[in-house]
Amino acid sequence: MTAVAHSLRPLALVPLLTALLAGCGGGSDNTTTPSTPSGQVGVQFTTPTDADNVQTVGAAIPVAVGVTFNGASAADGAAVVWSAANASFSPARSSSVDGKAATTMVGTQAGALQLQASATVSGQTASTRKTIYLRPAPQPLEVLVPAYFYPYENASPWDQLISGAQAHPSVQVTAILNPNNGIFSNADEQYARAISDFTGAGGQVIAYVSTSYGTGARSLTDIKQNIDRYLRYYGRDQLSGFFLDEMAATSDRLAFYRELYNYIKGLDSELRVVGNPGTFTVADYAGVADVLVTFEGKASAYASFNPQDGHAWVYGQANTAQAMLVHNATSCAAMQTAVRAAATARSNTGMVYATDLLYEPATDTGNPWAALPSYWTPLLDTVSALNRGTALPGC
Image 1 (cartoon, rainbow, N blue to C red):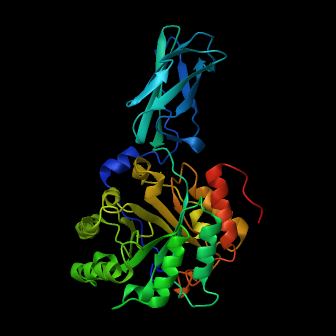
Image 2 (tube, rainbow, N blue to C red):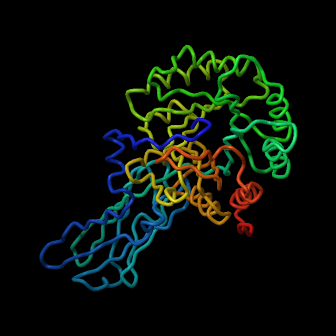
């Protein structure tokens, strides 16, 4: 994501294990093992539904099935036995009432989890399975701002950043510092003043670094020197981490980003590394960045964002390990729709940003990061409301 946003790259292929874990794409995989010819037992999961098949590790999760015998609701008392790896059920064995049986499950490990229910009616048994996903307990949403604008002395968007952080102390706002696309040889006093005022207001600053997709257009030596210059000229006390833009998404570039990650953590293990492939990566990239921007694009495209379409490995990560950057959200209502979607269990995304500024990838026209959105304050109000679990503010 340079000062003018880049187009999204094609989705990367996910390793075979991840594909197998996510194989059903989040849909129901209810399959019944037939009983003997003397009676047909049917059993099918009704809870969780496909719409709420991402749950939280350690939470009490209602689980239920419908039980039939020869096409009709089974008589009361049909025995249902529940099982799943890394999970417990209370009760572990239920009896049906009105053709339904229920229990409560607690999962202990994040990732894909296959539930199984086996029902026995008149001596005949059938089983069904359903894949759900467990994620770590979500943390409050943060706001990640591509602050690709200059801090002029008067009426700069940086002034809005500062006042927004001051007015919303409960919302963590992180700005991406980007002086001259990250290429500089000395400190800029205006930037130094702006970031000092911003961090003084409770904001955090991470420094923009282009990585050219690990193709060698920028060498590791050059990138490391860039990182060093940020710390030298702007100070560790003002910088919380680095934003590695133009990150690759495929396995063949993984070693390149592992070396950068280890270099930054070797300087200070508390420095936060945010990588921006702008799309899903192979799962191993979760080990070379603290946060991955898994979506950068139009609000209309974000409406169909779904990690279960081959990228369910993200449910093994905290929501704070994923970020989204949405542009072309042309109204406050569109912004709220995008941010609310990011906060869902399905998206599992903890760092958010939306703007009404426009960019068209097909023609590479527009610059969505040239200023803050017209709804900057409502954006912060929306994040605050979602974190508190209260009604969203009016637009």
